[in-house]
Amino acid sequence: MNDDLRNRDPRLGDEPDEWSRMVAAFRSAAPRGGAPPWLEQRVMAEIESLPERGLVARVAAWLVRPAPIRVSPLVAAGAAALLAIVLIVPDRVPGSDGADGGGPANASVTPTESVVYVQFMLDAPGASSVSVAGDFSEWEPSFTLEDVDGDGVWTGRIPVRPGVHTYMFLIDGTEWRTDPRADRYRDDGFGNRNAVLAVASGV
Amino acid sequence: MDAPVERTDAQVVRDVLAGDRDAYRLLVRRYGDTLYGHALRMTGHPDEAADLVQRALVKGFRKLPSCREPERVGAWLFRILANLCKDHVRSPRRRDVPMGRVAAVLQEQGDPASDAESAEIRSRIWGALDALTPEQREAFVLKHVEGRSYEEIAAVMDLSVASLKMRVHRAREALRGLLEEYA
Image (tube, rainbow over all chains, first blue to last red; front, side, top):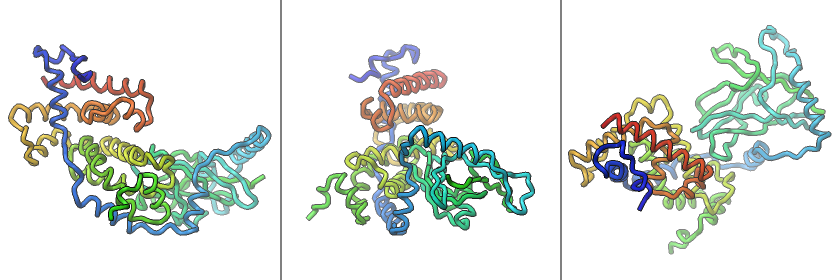
């Protein structure tokens, strides 16, 4: 016997079987039936239309896949210092009007000799894909984020050269979205706001 | 001759990742009905359910490299679908579509159990279900409509059994209140 019957609630009515009737009605009213026969073909057709993952894409996917990074306390202190530098770096982009300085995104950085790996994150539940496009990619959405857990939080590490950059997210290849976590923004001249990311030189 | 059908889920995942895209068809066949059934119960509409299942399966294919337990790929796909369903139910556009439409859909499909009284009850209970939060609705559907165990649901939804029980309890309380209003 299921617990619905044991936990019958008398408030539901005078009739003693009201709750169990309701639960039974829920079950009988629940839509039944298998997936329509055309669904398999539709799914496979869409999958077949996806581009093959080339070597470059696989390497890029590996690069942007979030992974735990172990750091010693000494390195952590250095990283904190670097982050502090990033936070206070002024916007020195030629031609800037000064009203939209270069603040960082909500991102962690991993410097190498010539680039800094910036961790991007976007809450986009329900999205099938999320890419990042910015001046660092010639505005091509070539860096894809991943939602590893299927919880709608998309993340990825992207190599960015030091400097002040603007970027946006592209959802499902069609919807442009401004990073809500960015500290600063800049109008793109087309009615949208780009997020601004300032990246200091690596250590 | 149907040797591929014998492949385990983990083998299928491995084959797909090795480049055999068509092997993914096996996963679609194995889990399509289960996924569709849940989507249908969450949305109440066949077209929306089919669309959500398609999105979930394509998303699963794209993200297959991140599936950490290939032997449990079915549960992993279910989780992707469940998240899509909740987002769909939550979306403002979806809110314009009453869940009570399920009763009409059922009658269109010629449900043999449909009579005047049960149709009224269906309309009432699915209308009440529509008033729950997406999380409450999901918990109630999984537990009381699909009849899954708490342990099974907790594993799929990545919740503790205690948290899940609380969610189901709240769903039931909310439903009771709503059904009282409608009575």
